[in-house]
Image 1 (cartoon, one colour):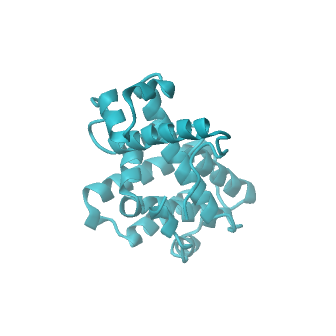
Image 2 (cartoon, rainbow, N blue to C red):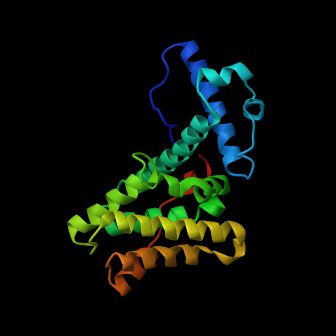
Length: 220
């Protein structure tokens, strides 16, 4: 199952569809560079070559590499956020929804290594973004507070702590793939739940509950 790209409306005309396809090719190429070390020095020619589009097409969509890379990171975060929303759409307990998203995100180094690389390298800069993972995590934390499941004085501080923990785990998993297992990812979620005020035994039960079929995580 594929998750829709950012900007869900289908372009109306053939020309519009062709433009949308070119823009998406550029974003996809940028995502590849963002996952590596060369994004700072890559040229626009390198990007258009990787996207298999004409050099002049670049400026029909973006004014600079910076604008393209920002769009690419936003697309990664929004795509993943929509996917996690879909997987937890039938979960009524805010603590369970939060833990499920954390467990699946922590597994990204295995399920979607390119996405994990982008998150590790650029995710923290988007902690205050209006789209993507951060506002969804904040929404889940605030829902947990409102329901009495979480005991948090400042939700945004809890969000920052959550983001730091997840990015650290993803980094560790990418650097040492054998050092982070599914059990490790679940333990991270358990510790985050305890940080949010969920009792020890209940946090463990929530963090080890069966996950939904997450095969889509590796297919989008």
